[in-house]
Length: 523
Image 1 (tube, one colour):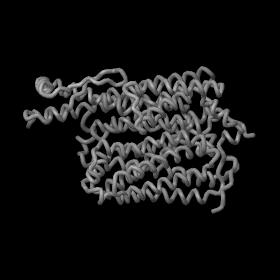
Image 2: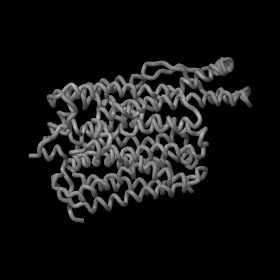
Image 3: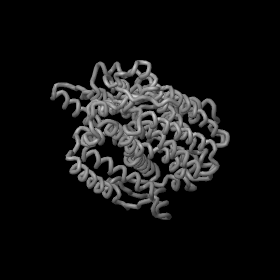
Image 4: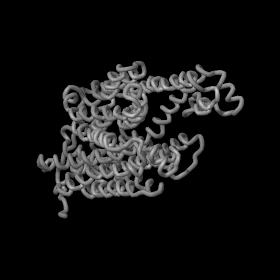
C-alpha cells in the first residue's frame, strides 16, 4: 500500500474530495447500522445469555459512552497521526466488533464487541468531522449536514434489513447473522480510503495555528465543562462511588481543571463556545431521548409488530432533509436554522402530546423535521466560528451531547414518565395504592432528580394485585399508556430552552453586522 501524501485541501481535485467524502459517509453509516441492530435485539440478548434487561443496558451502553470519550481524546491526536492511519484504526475496530458480536458465546465477549464498536465510532467521528470541514471549508454547514445524513441513512438501511429479514420473535442464534450486514459498509469504506492517495491537513494546521492556540480557543471554560462530564461518566464505568453528591463533586473537580487550564493557557475560552456546549444538553435529549416515546405513540396505529417502522420513517425524513440542507442555508444563517428547528420541535412535540389517531402522523412529521438539522448545523456553526480550535472544538461540542444525554437526558425523561405514571395510578386507584403501601412500605416513593422531587410508584406491584383484573386492569393500563404523551409535553420545554439560546446568538450576530464565518489564511 502506497503511503498517502498530505496536501492542502485546495490542491485536491473534485474527484479526490468526493472519494474522501463518500468514504467518510459510509464509515458513519456503518456505525449507524450497528446502532440500530443493537436497539432491535435487547430481549434476544436477555434470553440467550440469561441476563436482566439492566445488564443488557450495560452492554448497549458499552457501545455508546466510549464514543464521546474517544472523540475528545482522539481530537488531540488526529493531526499528529493523520486521517488515513486513524480511519484504518476505526476500520479495524468496527470489523472486530462485527466478528466478536456474531461469534460471542458469553456476555464478556459481547461486552468487548460493543466496546470495540463504541471506540470505532468515536474515532470515525473524530476524523470525518474535521476532514469534511477541511475539504469543504467554504460551505461547512451544508456539507456537514450532508455528511451526517449518513446516520439516518444507516438507520433506514439497517432497520429495513432487520425488519424484513429477521423474525422479531426468533432467538439470538437465528438473528446474530444480521450483524454481517454491517460489515458491508465497513469493507466498502475501507477500500475507498485505500484508494485515496492524498489527504488534506486540517484548516488549522494549514494556517500554522499552533496546538497551544488551538487549546486557547477551547480555554478554561471548555476544559472545565469537558472534565466535569468526563469524570462523571468514567467514574461510573470504573465503579468509583461518589455518593448522592456525585454531580457536585464532578462539577468541583471540573472547575478545578478549568481553572488550571485557564491559568496555564492564559485563556478562559470563548463564551459562545461554552454556551453551545451547554445547549447540547437539551439538544441531545430532544433529538435522541424523545425517540424512546415515538414507538409507543405509534403502536395504536401501526400495531406493536410494525411500530419500529416509525423510527425508520423518521430517519428517512431526516436523511432526505439533511441532503438538501444547502437550500435553507442559502436563505438563513446556521443560528437562524437552529432557531427554526427549535420552533418545529416545540410544535411537533406539543402536537404529539395532544393529538391521537391518524393525526399523530402529521405531528410526527413536524417532530422529525424539527430534529433534522440540530446536530450537523451545530457542528457547522462551531467549525465556522472557531476554526482555530480545529478538531478539538468541533468534536467536543458533539461529545458533550453524547455524554450529557446519558447523565441528564434519559434520567430526566424517565423521571417525568415515572411522575405522570404515578399520578395516573393515584387518580385511578388511590385506595389500592394505600392498601399496597400499608402491606409493603416503599411502593410509593418521592425520589429527586438533581434536587427536584417527583412521585414514583412501583407499577408491577399495583398491576400484580389480585383485584386488578378485567376492565379495571384495562382502564389502568390505558391511563398508563397515555402518560407517554404527558411526558412529551414536558419534553417540549427542552427545545424552548434551545430556542432562547439560538435566538440570543442570532440576535448577537445581527448586532455585530450579520453572520460571517471566520476564515483562516493559509501560511
